[in-house]
Image (cartoon, rainbow over all chains, first blue to last red; front, side, top):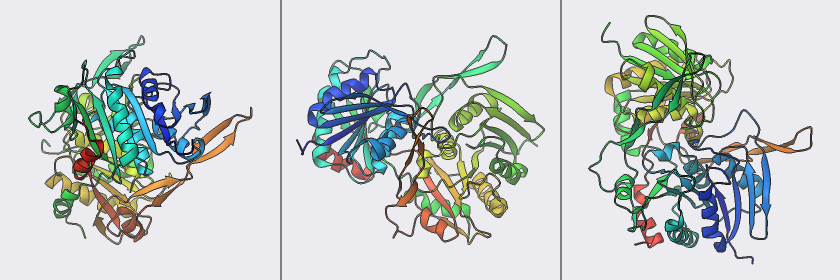
Length: 256
Length: 256
């Protein structure tokens, strides 16, 4: 079937996670699926790439419409390897997730799920990250399957603007109230480390903490709409230039 | 001296790198310096955070105006630890680098140097990343010291707009032609992996490749001005929302 689109799938929870297998099930009828995903958890890997050690890839499944590889690298390594080595042709779409845990608000910057999506976008391929709020490894994904399928189908047909990908997050609800295209909330994390002592009396730290919304009164954000039971879709850019700040910064720096 | 500002410094090449020590020398007269930097190379770590293992911190120097810690984590871990545990008060400025290697154009997304800068910005602290084009561990940093000092001093005095940090890059030249406040060039990397076989005949891959500028005709970019011998300053945002794409995406998705 020569007109079947190629769908490249990855995640940051590893190829055996329930989320990525729910994603594969949700979209596999839409095209030929290639999965290249980490061999274990890579949460919080952002857009990290593996430089100081080599990366290995192993095929774990090969059927007519779906091939699955596991990779020792990061989610971004997975996308780069797929585009350079494993995918017979340029994918029509890249999907990442479904992540166990929200990638809304500032989490987009830490997320390995979204790192893979930004990487797809850098290469000019329509790319979407899907995440649910629950971190539970046995979380239920059924309530967002129709939405994932619908968004994937629309993007396969209509594409995405140049340099823009999608960060889609689902709240913990029995039934979605609907969808909102909205902004990344301005959050940051506080109380970020738990200090412990090892059996030899030496300090070590575990990253932990809680997110704080800097502007909770804003209602056009992913944080807000998730709290209201809506799926959120943030159009997300790979160009971080703050155009609106150019003049102020030139004035502050007073450089030749 | 109670009015001395607190300057927090990190990098991604590790606390012993020539670049971070050049940066410390360049700015230490401007305030009290706290350094928390990785204990070894963390290039390409982006905004990665350490979740699955604990992080350790060790003090390696403690004098009146400068304290240095090494950390087993990522550059972002270093900033989070500094803000939560090591810094007696909120730093007035965060500096990252000087990186051995350019973080211009799309490299801003992969860079551990810039990951730390984005983290400082998330916490509302004026933050600047400095990088030179050369990857040489013995590279010369003298030609950019005056510029680093001047930019740091101006930002200490004038601050930065909310949600905006600076990505400063220096070309390989004997003498800078000047400075340009400009945009992140639209680049991507090609030929990204070298395939090898280990002694047991199994494949592995080394990340490599070369950057390609998607729009080389644009002259308001960091790539362009670096090639002309100028230092580049890109005002860089932590909010990735593509406001201009909202309507088109709503139209494409046709969701409730």
